[in-house]
Amino acid sequence: MDSFNSRLVNAVNNKKSHLCIGLDINPEGINNQNARIDDLKFHTQKIISATEDLAVAFKPNLGFYERWGSEGFKWLEETMNSFEDDTLVIGDAKRGDIGNTATQYAKSLFEHFGFDAVTLNPYMGLDSIAPFISDPKKGVFILCKTSNPSASDFQNLLQNDKKVFELVAEKCFKWNENKNVGLVVGATVPEEIISVRKYAPGLPLLIPGVGAQGGSLEKSMKYGNKDGISIINVSRSIIFSPDLSEKSIRLSAKGYVDKMREISSE
Image 1 (cartoon, rainbow, N blue to C red):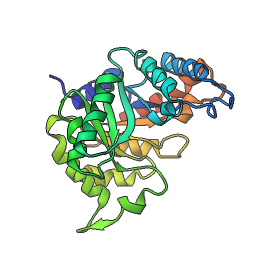
Image 2 (tube, helix red, strand yellow):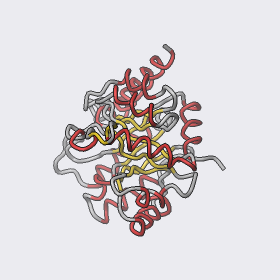
Image 3 (cartoon, rainbow, N blue to C red):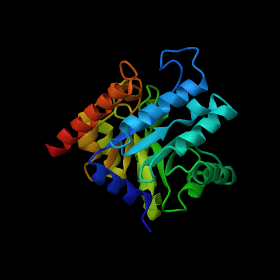
Image 4 (cartoon, rainbow, N blue to C red):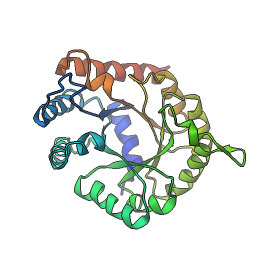
């Protein structure tokens, strides 16, 4: 049985790509404050059609679907049915609750929606993570060093000469018994990818923050793919590319993939 992490490695090697596309679709992004959910569905399908052969994974952010209530959940279900069987889909849910509740979240995200992996918050410890990592085929990316401006409020605090995010990396390395644990590390702090790799060698990294947030693609690729593999998440720079056409979406995605391949070959 292939673990999620081995499936991810195979996808990167087969597509010769490290691109993950974040599906954060909203009316503001398509410059239409009066957009209805059908408009957002149309734009979502346009993105998938234009980029599925280029992207290793897609990452729908559940907040952008939950905003619309039951219609948003239907939209998410339809989106999940749109992907080819070999396309990995990561549910950006950032769940993190006690074991009994976490079990229900895991059933929802893995069994109902069919995500291959999800993002999780480790603040409540192993019992909030365990229901998501019992099946080797299903993966998790645990928040470690994030790209938002306030990340250092807690993540950089020191405990026994280690920063909290380093302790998270170290603990997640131990939790990876089923080869299905990865980490989220922001591209806006690329040097700290080196620290994460020190404590979690070999774990796959999901690296957001390239593109509109200004993170370094080159450093993320070089540091993230040393002693392990990484996928680079890009959202707004691709999904809301200049004229919102399928052609411009594809050109933007291909530009990132070409640059990733160039960096990998150096």
